[in-house]
Image (tube, rainbow, N blue to C red; front, side):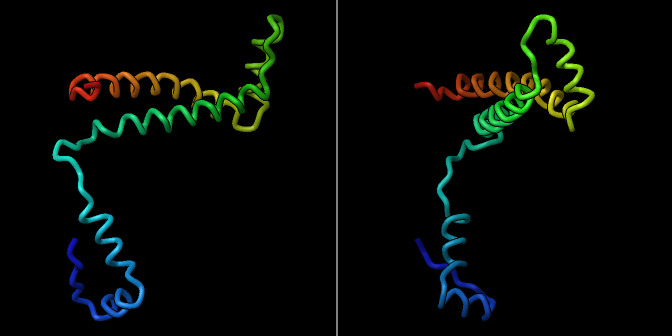
Length: 118
């Protein structure tokens, strides 16, 4: 890899003593990437992020939920009404489940389309 030539004398001075600008140029600008890289390759990471959000929100909701047949609906009402931001956590968990399946299906179809399984 070639060393970049910087035109700013201050950047040259700093880069001569501590080569952070050369490292940034090498790691960000000259990083080898495939030619067919597009936005469809982000859906695996999105699935992981949404799964993490679902796990965290599920644990928070489970701390206030009662799994008894007589008290389950009342505990959901209590989460929505009395728990701080319980309504928001429940809606994040509810919509996150739908978003997770959408993202996973797009991720699977991307793998089938590009033949990533081969």
